[in-house]
Length: 206
Image (cartoon, rainbow, N blue to C red; front, side, top):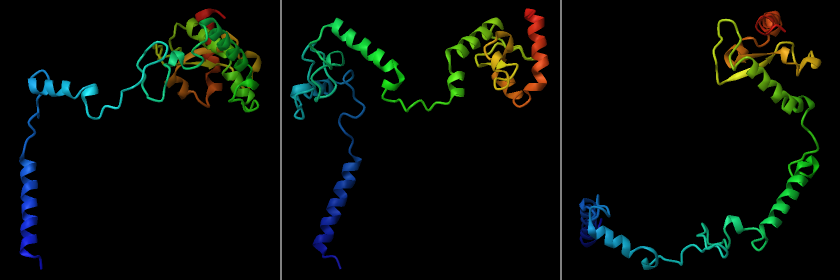
């Protein structure tokens, strides 16, 4: 059984909380533009006037730029070797580029584990071949019935990449297809070989 005094105390606390919930903050819905009091309060609590002020973020020791974190002493431009001249920094950068351009010197080097097939498919020769095919076909799908310009194009090898390595970079062995048409001929490449050869011959006489 609760003692009457304790029960009364709980009731008073409950009523106080209930009354606090009903109260509306004096600055609710007010902004600096609409109310002068809010503006004055904001200015009074800004920067060094605020009781939570801890000195603010530091500035770069060289260019006096405001830094994002207190642990920093220099900005990004002057973080490493701040006393070096621009020419010296440029030389250091060039040496680093030359050093990392050798595969074995790169920290991500794993002993040349990339398969030869992937290397060939991602080579510059393939990229140039693909661009030349697109330019020749005016960036338009050459599949009969489609012939639509598309932003999502594929350069298709008429004679298969795996079976005809000598024709991999031959422009006459390529044709432009949109992604949709290219997916339709998957595993049916042999059936479309003669059709694509005829299209190339008719259009470009090759």
